[in-house]
Image (cartoon, rainbow over all chains, first blue to last red):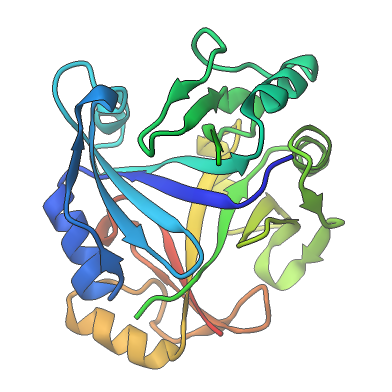
Amino acid sequence: MIGRLNHVAIVVPDLEEGARVYRSTLGAKVSEAVDLPDHGVTTVFVELPNTKIELLHPHGEGSPIAKFLESNPSGGMHHVCYEVDDIIAARDKLESDGMRVLGDGEPKIGAHGKPVLFLHPKDFMGTLVELEQV
Amino acid sequence: MIGRLNHVAIVVPDLEEGARVYRSTLGAKVSEAVDLPDHGVTTVFVELPNTKIELLHPHGEGSPIAKFLESNPSGGMHHVCYEVDDIIAARDKLESDGMRVLGDGEPKIGAHGKPVLFLHPKDFMGTLVELEQV
């Protein structure tokens, strides 16, 4: 079912510093910061040859990553995103296996403009998993 | 400097269950468990089209991931591994930028039989980073 690793998301306390570390110190190709107000995050994309790292920082009130940053003030790995061909089929299969889909179970339009779902970390060995239909 | 994302390592409390979730529920290609006594881990490789997920569980006494599992009994994302062409050049550049290399700063032979170094999470936004020379 799952295909490529679309990205690894890392929450950072300082986006400028995070971008600087990946650009100047690690020598990666790093985008400008992009505000995604609908998702409550500002993000910097680190383009690696085979996948992306997304550096995330809270944007606005009620950001879904604000609590994570409070618990992890230095930042940390937040989730992995796997690609699927058919997110509804993926959801139905996961739910039939007893896995918990977060929210109301309906895909939302994610940060890349594509349908996404998040899966409960407790069902995936402590790892928050995003599925994105590509 | 950094190239491909070689793998994301996830520490799991139960390797059989982790392998089952990735194989049966997520439908990925999953290896048999491989003991790596020199590294204090048993690992299951999840092969995605563009990279790998490595499920890790402590093996033997004094495993380097035992403490992580104590602090995160459900498991969790442990590190990301980026590929580099020249690990000595990478280390020298990182150290000249004030980044801390863990241990004595000399590359060790990692789980894939190649030279690796680990970088201090505090210098990389709370994320433990492994570099592997490919």
